[in-house]
Image 1 (cartoon, rainbow, N blue to C red):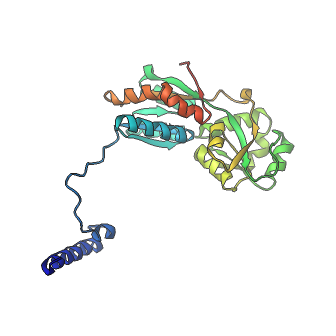
Image 2: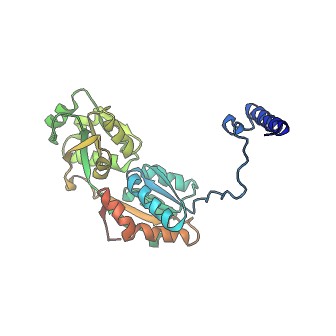
Image 3: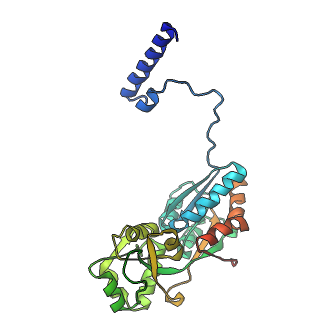
Length: 278
């Protein structure tokens, strides 16, 4: 390389570094003075945004990856507890599709005319279970005062916050029906979504947790030690709908894809039950 070229490159690097330390450019970029190829394609922005219950993450991520491989289009997905997501939509957050883990969150949006009612459908079903760390002694816990107390000892029971998390609402209802709520309420560690409750158990921070069966399946660090009777809480259903703000054909196509057989295999893989009723 000629001396003049070296001087030019050195000068360029110095200028970029000066910009970086002045706050105009990151040091990492400053150290790479090689210009980007003029033909580099721009990243394609997401054409559809989904707000979805946290328990859907594994299945939806796989479905979104398949959609991108087929169409080249990104799907942006925000995961959280259902009711906070509904409140975000109410506040104007840009979502095209909403998938909740309970009927109340969808009804909240429907009452405020924030969904397209003709697209509302019950997409999936699930099961409520009690989990423990994989390494915990014993493979079952009796859903009785004595059984829960023996498993908890001095620890806490992680579960979604019943005030805002569907899994927490189902959990409170089940424990109440079984006569256990008064016993465990003071020992509960409330989480902001069901995946956070799962994380507490998978890390060994709590000896027990209440999650969906699909969450337990997604975490090899935990095991199911009890299954709550189906009649101890309302049926667990995940409704789906286009939001009133959804525009164009893209959200409709993604909705049809999520309700179809290709996406169903990802939901079934995680243990969800495919519901056909509306």
